[in-house]
Length: 441
Ligand code: UD1
Image (cartoon, rainbow, N blue to C red):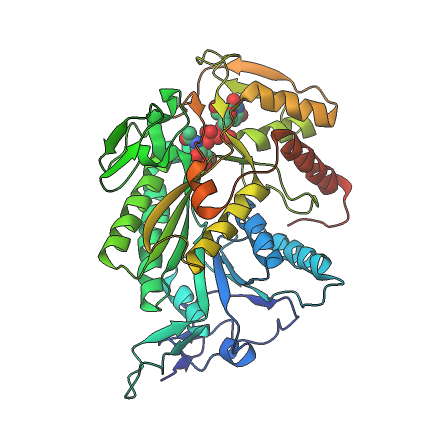
């Protein structure tokens, strides 16, 4: 039975808009108290299925949304705009329109809900829009079996600053860890059990310094046997090694929890994607990395120096055991990374990956140093970037490079774009932002 109540001061703050300008319909200030209702969405799009993207307006989220749209997937974006801007949604609409112009098929549906993924009432209200009782199995009026038209969820909603996590660990554990538990519990209630989780290479902790490309088996949540780089069969026991900061621990904890969830309930298919260092932006220059607050990741800082917002790039550590002394990372173009999500979803739907929990590295397998990045940005911008050597940053590792084979074999995915392409694309974005046609934010 559907029950709707008018909003009160405690009702979720939802704003809905759609690509086809149905922005004035819906009941944004409405709270639904049951798992499903005679929903507007069911009425408008009775046969359509959707991918829900939590945190879909952030840097990686927005690029993934665009790749989903290009792949023909209808999407709903849930984002509280804590580290993103409403204008990103407008850009996605524009990009989708441009992409589908002249195509015989219509652009997929996209909808945006401004909501915090930790706001259970808001999330239930959204999920109810896409749920219906599963009459196929119901021999009585039992509405307890629900089907959802959300066929998968990609979860980007997390805080990601290593330094902030060291200063404020509870904030990270509450949002990143407690948040994922609450979200999965709600998804389970709505029978949505395909889940792609944004994880990070940071789960490898100090193993990153071992000098060999990181294999997924170096960090597992159950006991696993595997063939190592030296050809020997080794055993990993579930656990982590030398995690250097609360942000990293929060990602590891989430993975461990998701692995346990998939063990307990075999209906779940959960894929953790371990991102290495995403850089670059969509080649249109219309999407990019535009965090609120002070950026701490290398590329946004370099770009701020390039733009003159910061006077100099501090290089954290010049005495690492690397050829030029600066830290080495596996930089991956964000479009490649976004496509890794499409590959993971596709593998889930066509059952190339078995049900349960599985982790995949999303990296190129090639390391570049901090100085290599500076040189690459200088080359595309024809501008000298002032640098200053300072002490190592707390929580950093010297080398972190992926072994990307598992994703290549099982997801049919590998990177295609270089660091130079990433720098060129991000430079275009910066130029667009300066005087470009589409204002951001
Ligand atoms: C870390 C995590 C990564 C996570 C990311 C989230 C590890 C191994 N990696 O990335 O999984 O997604 O945080 O934020 O823990 N640097 C400078 N000057 C600057 C900024 C950065 O020299 O102003 C250096 C850093 O010291 C580091 C490299 O650039 O050596 C890359 O730093 P950053 O972009 O912050 O990413 P990671 O710390 O590698």
